[in-house]
Amino acid sequence: MEEETIATTIEDTSDRSERGWIRRAALLLTGQAFSLLGSSVVQFAIWWWIVLQTRTGSAMLLATLFGVLPQALVSIFGGPMADRYNRKALIVLPDLVIAAVTVLLSIAFATGWASLSLIFVALLIRSAGAGIQQPAVQSFIPDVVPEKGLLRVNSIFGVIDSANRIAAPAIAAVLVNVAPLWSILLVDVTTAVIGVGFVTLIRVPAKPEISRATEDGAGTETGEAAARPVEPLPLAVLCRTFADLKAGFIYTMHHPYLKGAVLGDALTCLMSVAPMNLTLLLMTREYDGLNLDLGFVNLTTASDKLAANELGLSVGLLLGGALMSAIGPRLLGGALARMRAIAFGIAMVGITVVGLGLAPNLLAYLIVDVLNGVASAVCVGPMRTIMQSESDESMTGRVFGLDTMLSTLGMPLGMLVFAPLADVIPIVWVFVSGGVLTLPVAWYVLTLSRRSVPGKR
Image (cartoon, rainbow, N blue to C red; front, side):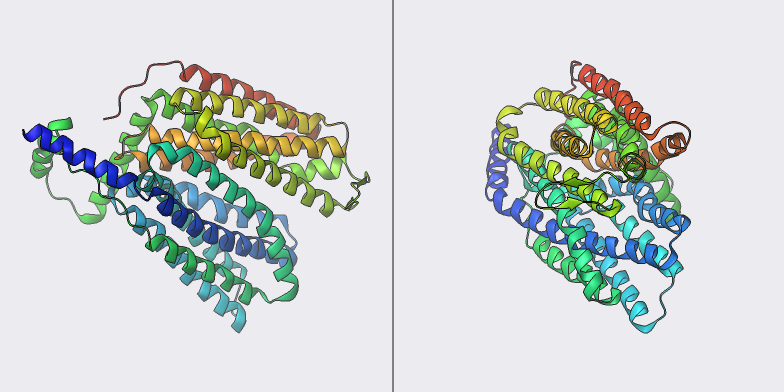
């Protein structure tokens, strides 16, 4: 009788959790759209200010390090935090902290107290906030969206990200020409407040409370925890965090689908995304002096070609995300199909990176650039869905934290290899080698998809 009552409770709670999920997803996606747009506009404005004021590569290198590495390092802790603490709060609080820091930076610019060091500190805090927020957002999605809607929501998320890549540089370029930087910084503050407002409206559906002692022996663990000596708080938090990291790493590496998604993402960033950051060199060396008249626009200067390159990639990401959102849920209903889509997408990324290096002219290059964006979108949606649907709820944050750390570190580590090579061998062969080295990654993911998968605990 008691078992029937528990089963009925679980079924009723599950029904309630699936009702209204479209509204919850819409609130989350809208809030993140505002937050991403404001952050990107301000990020572009800050980087351009640094370039115009310093005109040095060392300053841009420092700006990149302060803007990227903190996110990779903090995500080590952000993943376990998303598993232990309120995920909704971990989405909202970083936005508020970043907004406060941005207000202070705006005041510093308005009063003439701004300096390069202060900007680097602001970039560090903004990047660290993203290291906490990103795993929390990805872990929060399966809390408010049933499994049947995960792929569609993740694909729409990709569309939003792609649209942001197109809109943010254009908006930043207009604002930089008509407004002082201190006022542009307030754009991020405004969009952060709007984004936080949407997220706070989300009501997380209740989940059935099941005694974990009957499931996985948590009662014994509780007894062991009670017998452990009390440690000083900072040491206890640090020990617990590294224990969580170890558990998350072991959990991910023992699940072939999660392992394939996380390592596939990281290795693709290492092999293919890193060469993509050498587009400036490719444009200046291979297409210098070559104009392209598309009818509606004539690409003549280096900046025109770089803008076209960024736009082509963004359009491809937008098209790929829209395609996955429209047909993905019907074609990729199971985990095996999603893994095959990841492998296919990674292979296409590698092939298109080779194509970027071997393109015979600028028009062909831009066409391949769009296809590269489509291929990237084909990877991202199924990757996120696998990490959300295949991981245990108590491990989702750690899985995404591990993915964020490895993929974020993959790009600068790849740059350490490919950037020096670009000064030794023709830049074309850097793209070819990066793309070719990506193909075994696709095969590796496809191999993992054929292994048996343990049941979720």
